[in-house]
Length: 166
Image (cartoon, rainbow, N blue to C red):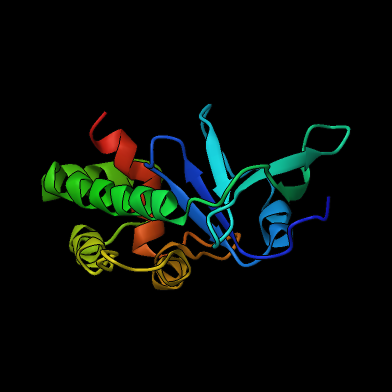
């Protein structure tokens, strides 16, 4: 079996958290992508499920395509569910509560942070009738971050969104 070398969609099993990677090496270099005790599914942009190969210390060493047919539309439905979750979270919380949540978790938060997150989430693309590869391209800018950086408002919000309305 050949290792997978293409794009990776890492999606929490409840569709509440999403990371996108151009290569498995990019994902692996990030280190522990899961900050909670939850499970994730991994897919390529053709809709194949990816399965990890582990190093002796149980860190992910390589990804392989799992057996079975690709299910690109199923992955697209899950990405649309992620967008809905992101939007519903901002509707379920007041500006005051959102600022308080941000200030609990971030070192410096400006008074306009709640509005920045609301605008960012409103700007998430409509993924209706879009191919999986196009979904990936359309979402990439919304979930990209640089290690050591806090990331975009989208990235920050997806980390806090579950805490906002559990």
